[in-house]
Length: 88
Image (cartoon, rainbow, N blue to C red; front, side):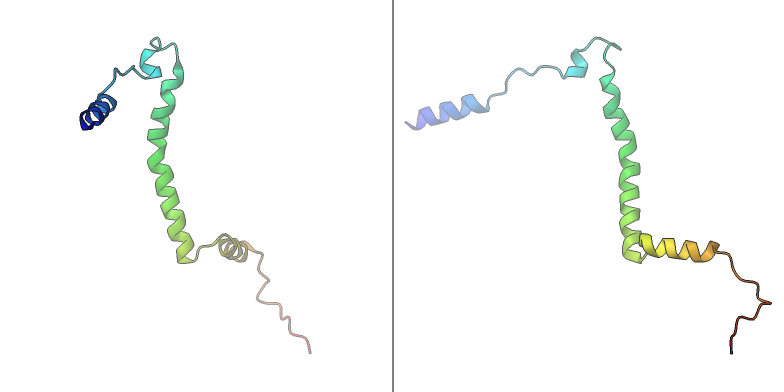
């Protein structure tokens, strides 16, 4: 009985014939789908760096509302310093 189990396991684990991927089997330059993986591999490092920088900036306190408030205060029209706005 054990020999049947080993034979079945050996039969299951033997490698099969592998077919080429879809882009390898396609006619050369006939199917342009092979460019998407390269585009993904080129853009992936930039996306990961942007995600890490965004997380670190969020943890450092640069939240969207805070940044918007700081930018609005920086570029807001300031009053002339000669005008006294005190009321009595």
